[in-house]
Image 1 (spheres, each protein chain N blue to C red):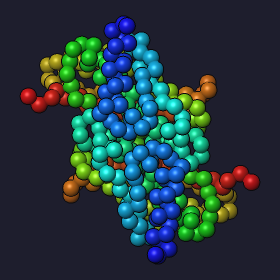
Image 2 (cartoon, chains in turn cyan, red):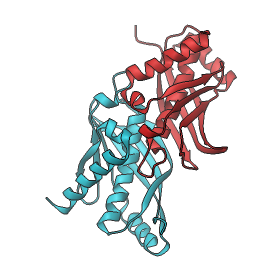
Image 3 (cartoon, rainbow over the protein chains, first blue to last red):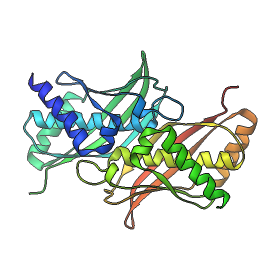
Image 4 (cartoon, chains in turn purple, red):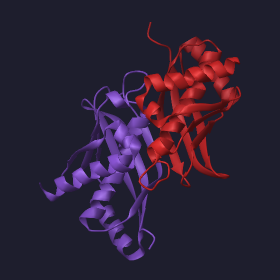
Length: 153
Length: 153
């Protein structure tokens, strides 16, 4: 396994072990190329009353994918930080009638600046965008502001 | 049982039957006085990696409470509409270390105008605010834009 694949398995295991709702969603890492993280969850446990994806599931896969993108960046640089989301907004443009697949591509320079700040101040914040497509159309756009701080000694 | 209590039981049952993630959250109606709807979910199935409430659970209880407030208003007026959330934003101000309790008090005149429009056009939209407190402090503020349309004949 590549380092990326090992980290992705660890991220999926972390979600399932520490966040019961993530386990209930059956979320997992779909792919990670070192920059773009994609997460996937099957429709059945995430459906709503209309038979499409539940707004709360669509939100949750977005907030977890953003969280995961930061978690991977920290791990790749051997940094230890607690990641929380401070604020977010989401637009639902189209229903999702199949698997939920969410992508997050952090801005490389913003992420690098954030990590450098975190090394010196033990704190950083970053805005991330996540998207979910349905067929070839954009179904969901999400923006989240995340804060990372070092664990208390 | 009062009419309100019967409707509230039906709302909780609808959430659990039709939205698997709502069942996984163990969400239920806590109270409804004809204007303010409060929903509650226990912490354990909704915890995150830090032992406080998961951001996705806090979002989901908000989006469901707003949805439920419209569902109750429609049912009280014997109207049948499909309710979807179109956009929302949420701010996390403080962690929630106990049960998640979310309140929604729709603006009475906006709701009434919306329902009147729905009767004539078979469509309405409304913005709702939901809040979650932790102790005596505001922990979460949520705003959602919901769209209601009549079922296709």
